[in-house]
Length: 116
Image 1 (cartoon, rainbow, N blue to C red):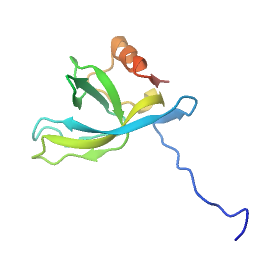
Image 2: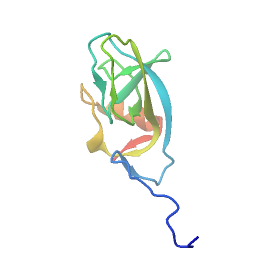
Image 3: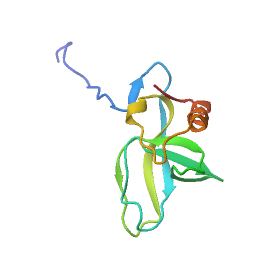
Image 4: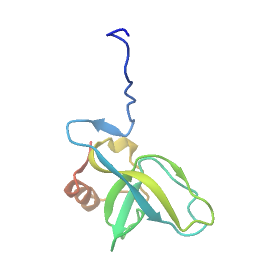
């Protein structure tokens, strides 16, 4: 065995800004309107209300950011996704319709999701 042989490789995530703060993630179960959502894209803002997670809406409270793009079956009402729950993320990679308000950005910051 060579001492300078590569033992692993690091793949950089295009959504992560830097590693100066811990980057945490989890798997969330997202409630989707049946037949109306075909995919949840990487960078999509995820809301939470009364413990139920959903794609961001004007009345929602941002709680996480989708870490990967996930296809949603047309008959699905729930889908599991990987999501970032803290860390410095690139604002340019964030997807939100409607656009995030200053209040939304503050709520993300309170959860330790910093958009740069």
